[in-house]
Length: 120
Image (cartoon, rainbow, N blue to C red):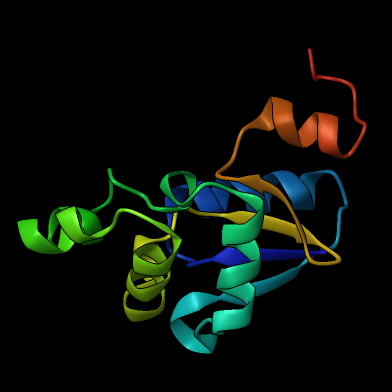
């Protein structure tokens, strides 16, 4: 199992804390230090719509020129942006055996993925 993200991202921190709390071991892949290969990004784009993978609320997206934003309209253009600016990818991404399980962090979804009962 692998978790992709950036360590100082608050959402990634929440996901990592939740995984640690539930003793779930994952390999963490830091986009900033380890980069991202095109095969991985392409695999994600085959499993999810590009609009789900691009974080349009983040600072990286908001810092793009308007023409760059408008250019992202399909998998190919999204892939180009994702490879150029990995911090534009919504995070964290939870993956098992090449299968993208979840994009972002949602405690209820993680509980379902790992078959855990909700905390009360």
